[in-house]
Length: 344
Image 1: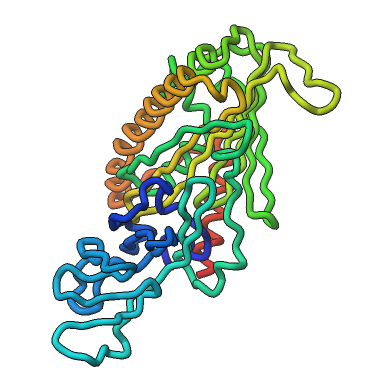
Image 2 (image 1 turned 90 degrees about the vertical axis):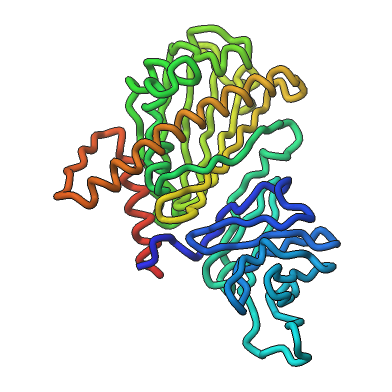
């Protein structure tokens, strides 16, 4: 069984990362080279020359063609070899794989499965990253852990109380029960936690100007394997939305994570935070960027620590894993991912 679900879109890069230089990435165990053509089109090819397997990302662009830096084999944007050294005839089988890629709202998505199926699989909606009335920050972190540890982390936000105390966590997060809904038809897991009369964490206090107590909502929608959205909302305690369905007294964030397996023991964590308040306030943007980077780094440090522990225990006599009620979302996600893997 392939360790990664194949027929879905994964984020390969931020749009800003891909320019005239060659960018090397490993996606689901497959080495990929990405670049832009002279007309700003995106290209994703297997990052191995057919001749002696030299990384094409160490080569040179010749116009829109990619020339291997070892022996000069040259490939067009479709992956077809168009030139080889020392002879006019190009071997018919001289071709590297080309991957479907699309660019949406600042993220570059790649399809590593059957390219014939790519058109039938929807790219996740991330329009808040560049929509009017919203402003966003984001980056990518590489974690030396299997993707499942990051999925567990994001589906159980009770860890905010402890790992992220002083940033985004307060006692109410861990103390408040969650509800979990699984939609097999849509392929989603939803986990919700609504807190009333809660303390306001620093993350929100300094960015919104609100004070304790607040009502706080965390509504997660996860589409296994690679896309996670947290609808985070806070408002003064007892706040009632306007009768027309709007919510002007509240502050909203869309916290997005694109989970891209790199290898079986490393993961690319693309993160973004979009907000609908203080959208033109550079100081708020700078503050949230600093806070979110610290939060992400705390997760990275914890998961980097966990990976060798989990790997060592797998090689031993076996350890019984304990799960409790707050793990229901993560366990549902595991089952859905296993079904996706079994389909290949």
